[in-house]
Amino acid sequence: MKDSAVQSQKQYALYINRFARNGAQASEQVLTNLQALGMETEDFSHLSLEQLKERIYDKHFAYSNIIIGSGDGTLNALLDTLIDNQITLGIIPLGTSNNFARNLELPLDMNEACLVIAKGRTQTIDVASVNDVKFANVLGMGLSVKVNHELPKDAKKFFGRLAYVVYAMKFARQANPFHVTISDGQSVTQLKTLQVTVCHGRYYGPGITIAEGATLDDGLLNLVAPRIDAWWKGLRLLPALLAGRIAEKKLEVVKVSAPCIQLETRRPRTIDADGEIVAKTPATLKIHRHCLKVFVP
Image 1: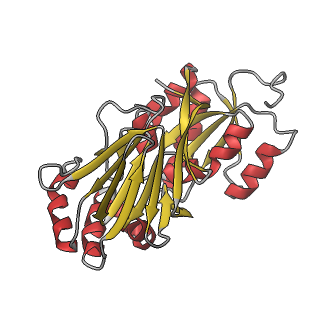
Image 2 (image 1 turned 180 degrees about the horizontal axis):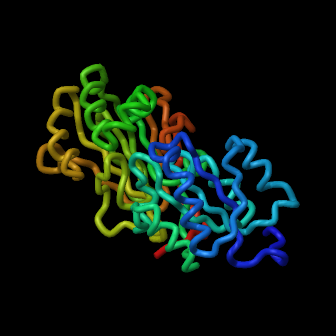
């Protein structure tokens, strides 16, 4: 825990990812809003993420609160650093999907998000990991890996969440279904699919609801995987994805909710978390209970 004796409750470190979808134009407005609310900030936005991590680990880093204006990817990259140093996180959603903020029921309007932080109410939430690498919101294996790493940044900026769905359909024609074994300590399921998705909240991707009622402090991972043995069957997912649902009426969908899930494939497959490649199968997914403090409404 950082020494906060010299820090008032209104002092915050600030980091705005100017490369996030709405980061560049929002930077000045966020600073203005925070100042108007009487919040004293030191801006670290000129640093790279690695430099920011180094500063936070430095024993002279005086802040126990940090405000981050970004999308889910930046939050994911800083998780271990914030947890290790017991830093309380305030979020200004500036990305494309902002599912981490949605899962916390944070306002997506930056002015209202600043007000939430100023009010000072906090909650300690769970964090998930895959092969001991923590992630903020969603893990994917299969089609999503290609989409996340082939989707042009300009497409995300101009088309927002719809870009993910459009590119998923584009790449589905090139994808080959794969075999996966899913274990949760109680049961084992084998299937052929194009995509396995695991969240520890309610929303992922373009605002899709993975599990009604799921929260970031319920101690559960939520997995969905449609049974697909040919790429063209994946096209049945499109109407539901556009509506923010899982296409359970069109395809048989495997669902698992558990605190620990294991994934095995016939050959190692790449796994990404919040858009970054982090692991390969075989993979063990876990929930780490009540380890990150965040400002909430």
